[in-house]
Image (cartoon, rainbow, N blue to C red; front, side, top):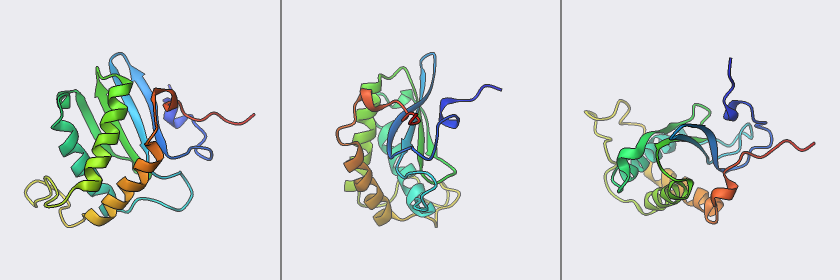
Length: 155
C-alpha cells in the first residue's frame, strides 16, 4: 500500500505551520497544522468546528472559490486539510493567511451554523476560534512556498 507523505512523517518533530501533504496532477493537499501533534494541546471541537465553517465561507467566496475542493478538520484535532485544484502554492498560502485573518475579525452569526444547515449546530465557539486563528497567524505570518516541506528527521 502506498503511504502518503503526511502519514510517513515523524509527528514527534512536526511543528505548527502549513505543509504540502501530497500532489496529484493539478490537485494539492495542504496540511494546515495549528497544534503540534502528541503534545496534549489540541483544538476544542467547538473551535475546530467554527474555524471550519468560517474558513469555508471565506474561501468559497474568493475569486478562485471553485478551485477549493475540500477544507475540513483532522481527526487528531491538530489542524485541517485543504485540497485545491489548479492553484499556485503562493496563492494557496495567501488564501490561508487571509482566511485566518478573516476569522480573527469575524463577528456575527457563524455561516451555515443553523440547525437546518449544520449537523452539530450547538457545538460552536467563536471566541475560541478567533483566539486559535490569531495564534496561528503569528506562526504563518512570514510563511512562503519555501516553508511548505515537512520537517525532516534529524540524523
